Image (cartoon, one colour):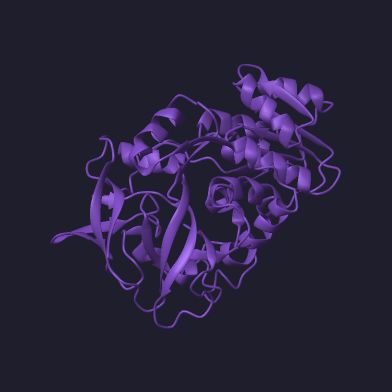
Length: 368
């Protein structure tokens, strides 16, 4: 079938919307008609050429929501008409990692996905004789996409796609960092560095876990106001002396849990230092730039602080994303403040511009 998609032709250049050929789903694959897609920083990171694992030409986009149009042979968990959220972090449910509660990093299709292929090592995207690669197993800057069954979570059919698409990446990453990776305990003190999509999700996750005190740190007063709306009890403008101020607020001890959601390695160091001596856990959810490293003073670790990384918030996608969407539908998670701009596919580069200007939290492309 023919459909329109935004293609990364060359790194550092604007995406170009073209008509492409999309092949039918094969064994274990599903054809999805996209309804909405968030414009995520990871898309911009890859388009810029800073991502060492990036490739072109490719159809970017991974924060999608849509409806199943067709299933390939062997698909058992989905049917035509199901509303789904795309998952860049697949969940087969059967591999060693999926069967282990300590990680959500499924092994089933990871190697081929990292090369821009579907699980059988080929692509379904083409322009004439030219192969176009898939992005993160999703490629949702498009009217339609073909994906692995393992990369789709079936969600409440009544949930609006412009909201549910945020659970495909940013929002679930933040929520999960607090709920699954850190497993915040009731009555605890938490500090979240960064009030973008992931950081605000972490604030909401800490609230849902019953944290007693939630401090959010950011440079933007507007974003800090949004953090208060998600449950932050205290807000603080970042900068020099941030760690010292956090220690003062916590009687000199630091926070039980800290979360880094900026991708800035300097802020990551602050998050480690602000964690409580003895048992403080720092969860790193931000993605640092190519070649950057994190300096940690060993004394902070010797005295009991721990550091954990969190990809997609530790969320096992097909099992846990539907439950997060259900909590949104019950009013426990407020998504509306995150929806800043509604765009068309032809305006996808405008989404990148808004992101770089820090104008709002999430721009969402609507396809219908």
